[in-house]
Image (cartoon, rainbow, N blue to C red; front, side):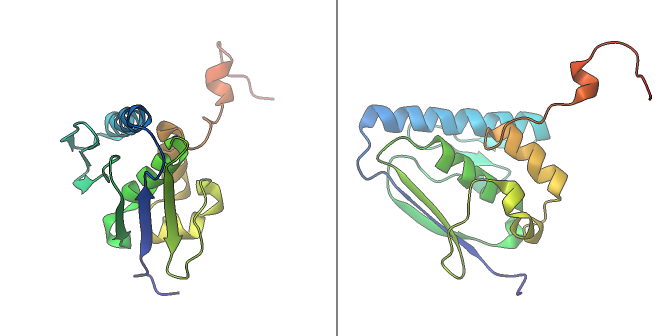
Length: 153
């Protein structure tokens, strides 16, 4: 497999109303802000229908149709942000993410480990970022859930 393969995306706010698009933009901004805070990433430029930048990557606008490509050299953040945008999208908005073969990329990062590794993310890093973005549920850490001394059996 060519390690330079691209991933293509397209956002289409086909039938979403203005209010839904504003709410979607706010949700995308909140997700990007959480990711930036959790991983110490640069974040700027958020405005109405423009979620801004994260780690130097311009998050697609939420108010118009946008298409583009991601290269593995950009790292996993753009890919995970697009997954979050798809998950957060209201009815009437289509967010497509496909590989070079035109096969749709799912929302479960654990089912896309080869792709995330190609974009430079370890399985653990991708899982942690996906949890922060709300793509996947947070994994329960038993050590955190049970207060008190550590017990070894």
